Amino acid sequence: MIILAQNPVIRTSPSLRPQYQFQVGDRVERYNHCKGTVVRIDNDENGVFIVVWFDSLYYELAYDPYDLKIIQ
Image (cartoon, rainbow, N blue to C red):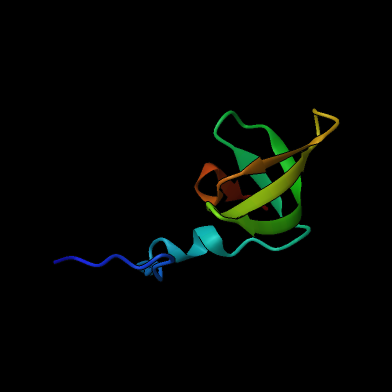
């Protein structure tokens, strides 16, 4: 019999760790080179998501941490 935890602890390798180190104010970029700024980091029943205000768009959008990368 296999019992699954309702909210299992996610363990990541050191190579994945930087993708979850977002902070408010970080400059980020999407896969399509759209650049913006992290305005908040939230979580819900599906996990962690990053809210970003993009330079070329005039509204906020929420993204999975794997969809963004931190830029200088």
